[in-house]
Length: 287
Image (cartoon, rainbow, N blue to C red; front, side):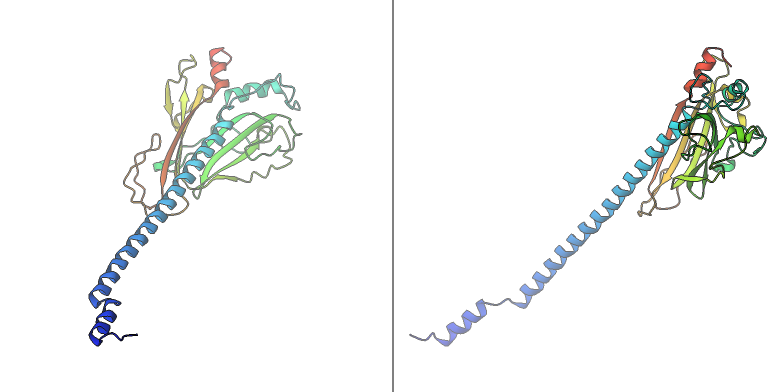
């Protein structure tokens, strides 16, 4: 086999490698592509966290509003003809008391005078207290009654350290008509976390025509029997910070607008609940 000349061998070896300039260009391009990929991954991660936070806040808000609606809707309900109603007390007198008090004012219950609707001062949270005939309180307790047996239940909703809580009471116990049994320790149960604001307005029927004349806060509810609707507003925030630059102001019902100072995701929820029993009583002239 014939050997190649030396100059051709050197030329062939040079053709198989890269110059320093080519290597530098390749490194720079590789770094740019790597940075782009990293940025995309970071962006996707942030977007995923944001979407997760938005979904969580939306679900929490819907759950909270639904839970409140299910109970508040029956405020003022009392059916003396129900075969499930416990009749261990004078139900005629109780019938009038419940219908006159779909919401409970302060100083109306002898054994718990501080239990009643309140309007939070300077933008703080309100307290909602409703009364109606149920077989369970808002925590799912029978309060000493038989399963399925109905009795007048006082349910209280309030916010403590950013958590919406509830506790239930037996109206008969609070009025001194029955001895407390069962789960009457009045321990509060947590319903919803991340509650920045919980506000309540009450729809007053001033003309007794079954229509809301105006919405007022708890301080301006004089006659509970005139309350035929309840408007609830909540401002919720995500459980974790998402690095969101919050510039939007939120005005929950009658409260002044506020701009969140943290970088959580915030969402506002409102719902107006018509008290069908109270509207019916007013229209039929039964109050």
